[in-house]
Figure 1 (spheres, rainbow, N blue to C red):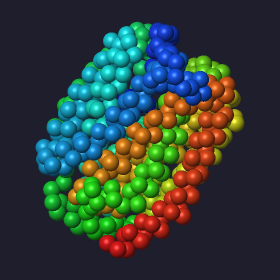
Figure 2 (figure 1 turned 180 degrees about the vertical axis):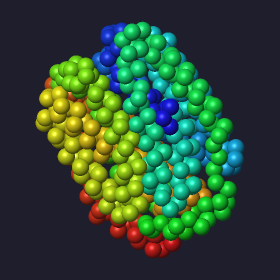
Figure 3 (figure 1 turned 90 degrees about the vertical axis):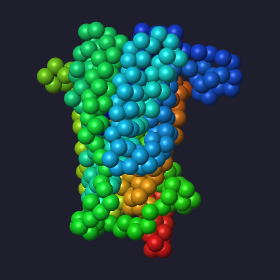
Length: 417
């Protein structure tokens, strides 16, 4: 998980170099217009064209995970995880190598497709094993696993920026892709799932868990699944709008190159702190949810998240405020990747857990469609204010849904068995 983190969280450092190297990476075909910029028949400027690759990556990383999860579950606990993660390692390495050679938008998007398929294979398999191995500490286990993805790029922020500055973004894509993908491939052969009965005898969980295992079709037929899906989309969209845009936002706020401490600029310091907070949020809130319940933890985290978006929009033009409030956004967003998988498995059981949580995880891909919208709103209004207002409101709506819709709905479903 650490080794695929840069595919998402290191992307922001490549956006401006890609745009600067290819200023003509935009297209304009007359058609309907949304905020003056659109996709496939609408005009996209070079930044939005580059960011479309990020959207494609997120979409492929998530939307194919149900198939990958199904393969893992059906190949068996011994061979399934090994084969899928080894395949993922090859694909994530190849995706970034393609990016390093991309001289056209179509080639950049191909790299996003290949990398997205590989990233999803690694992610879905890893989280699927965590929810199965540790039923008594499911939130914490998934949180620790997902923390590798959230915080994994913290150590590589400075090296990536150094390579980009010294040798160009192409070299950074090539060498980081080769090393990351290669190590994932080697580590894959150490994985396996728990044998039947191997996790028996663990302490009873503090949260209610279903004694029934729902098939994917049965899970998809419930209101609980689709409510979780809508909530996931809303929170994920708000976070992706920020995580994909941190470097451009810092530049527009005029704080990105400001030196803060030990020669470290605002954007570099923010990148390190953000990734640590993003990773730390996952086990932290996962552990909290194991003890006070999933819905109450959602309300706590997403309520703080809504406040954080509002504060960054209001005070982010000051370098230290930018670092602090951006970090709070990452801290209160990253936990969706521990809260939602654990809630899903609590509700629908463990037998088909990898497939079911992968179906829910596709919400992240759905939410990625909204990422370029942030650029369009900013272009139309001339500032990021509306973007931060929108993301704050989305988080507050999810708080309401968690407490007053999801909690009673799930309680009724669990009571029926």
